[in-house]
Amino acid sequence: MKNRLRRFAALALALLLLACLTGVPVRASADGVYFTAANDQLMELTADTMPFYSNDVLYVSSRLFEGGELGVSYARHTSLGLATLYSSSLDLRFDLAGQVAYDKQNNLYPGYAIERGGVVFFPLNMVCRYFGLTWTQTATDTAPLIRVKSGSVVLSDADFIYAATRLMSARYSDYERAQGGRPVTPPGPNDPAVTDPPVTEPPVVTEPPVVTEPPVVTEPPVVTEPPIVTDPPAEPTPTEQPPEGGWEA
Image 1 (cartoon, one colour):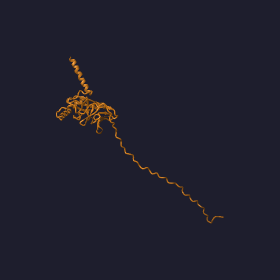
Image 2 (cartoon, helix red, strand yellow):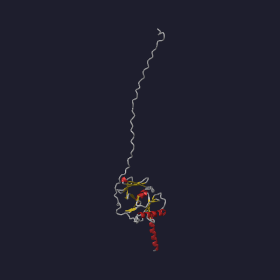
Image 3 (cartoon, one colour):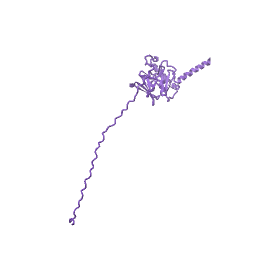
């Protein structure tokens, strides 16, 4: 009986470790508070950086991509209603009103972004698959850590948490004080709608035409008639003069 319990406990621990290492969320944080990190950079703990789950999809803040730490950058095109994530060779465009995502070839992707308080949040799994990133969710002494990683990451998750323990503790305390001791609750019914969006054709985003200077038009050269070449005047025929004394008879 004791051996069976030991085997069961070992199996449960192995499954828990596997879930952490593969990036599968163990469970949502009870109070909705998460740390986030981009490679070896710990993000601030604020409402603007706070991930959340919606319809079992984990969303992370656009702030995570503003520093270029992951090789993916963020741009907002307010006039077009678009939020874009891009690298040196790829881009992924999110129509915030239409709740669709597509690339520059207009290929549709199964996901959409959510805007809260002026900050755009992206579906993490979808973004990581598209740009070749990975992510993990790991428990810490204060709040779970969601860490997004590229190929340039240095520290393991365990080493990163160990190195950032004091900083995480200080930021968590600051966050609690900023909340006035009120617990943070998961998203409620007044949050933006997160129903599955209809699949619609995305708007065609065209590049603006290149405005070039018109060529300078000059007057054509004046073609003049060549001068008329006339024959030179004939030389007068010399006449013989009579010799002195006159002509001989």
